[in-house]
Image 1 (cartoon, rainbow, N blue to C red):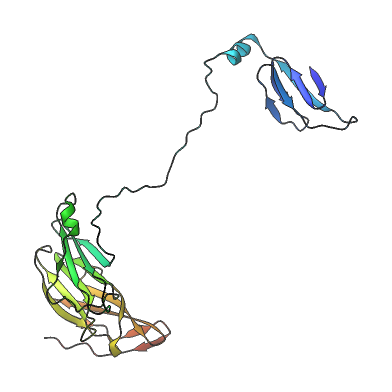
Image 2: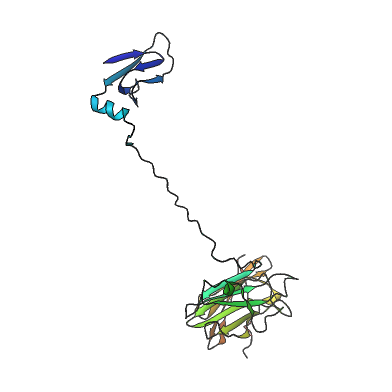
Length: 256
């Protein structure tokens, strides 16, 4: 059956109407559907099919089963707070010791920026809140560390090595060592002294008895590295590359 309509369509028991642009429109029983108003010279041609008894019964049912279901999912990770030690912000780093304990280091902040402490923390049971808030200052690291030079700790085949830059009475990159999974520490040992009193901007280690660091130079930054063997500095990079395409050199520090 074909029907010509103007603006309001009133059709009993209509299930499908196909508009002039072939767009299907589904109607329930005894619906009223407003259509755009067309000039008298134009009419909209609709195709109508009468619903059968099963479909009419289904539409009139009070317990309809929807033909379309919608599932809303949130794929964004939402992390829950695990521990809240309530400590001040600080440069920090962490590594896993050979006994699976978590060993963390931090450089405290405050004062002039050159008199900070270098501290260590050992977490053997992550469920114990007290272990996340207890810090111990490393030997010789009280009130002498540059607070903005970053810090580093790495597990080099069972030997933990921690690094920070001296800030008072020198600018040496210092190293501390632990051979009992962070239980006790020795040091500091001088690793390298950047030229011209330069301050470090970052420290890293790959865990192969090495340390890499960035430091300020006039016109850019330079990168240095050091390797150790048997607890002593074995070699220091003599080529220091400035990112401004120039280079600087300085002699490795003497070994004690």
